[in-house]
Image (cartoon, rainbow, N blue to C red; front, side, top):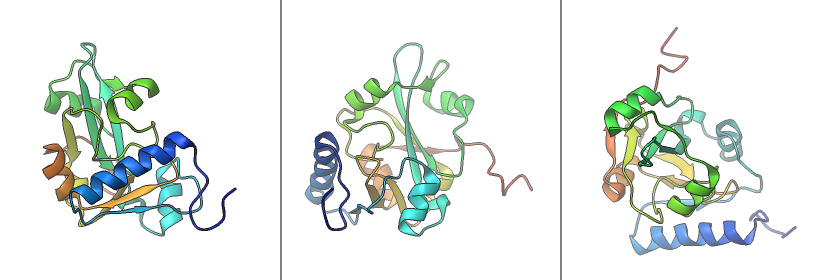
Length: 175
């Protein structure tokens, strides 16, 4: 185990995080990579690791439809992506989560660490309206050991994301 605040991560994770760091620096973004000394494979663990509400944690999920079309759906950590809504917005035929190998090949990031920006290949991105309304959010940082503090408006600007309602009601909204 390394000492200091940076967790021990594998070489691939180091490369993915470094690639994202370069992407952010090259564009002069108001963004920051955070590497708490703990893995963050879930939204609650990520929120607890950096002391924020789960609502400001973004999950970036790559979907693939029957024709092989890829779309990245980004939503607030507490919301569930509604596949029917995503299909309607993105023109997909029965979207399903992409497998880990497809995620890695298309985004350059491992499943569980997909950043909302800086992808290896271009593909459509749909950002949920609730997530787009956040002033600041924290998305995948290239590994389950890193998070990217990012302004959702930058996600839209850099990816050409469509902002739409792609999630179901949150538990708070159904009360």
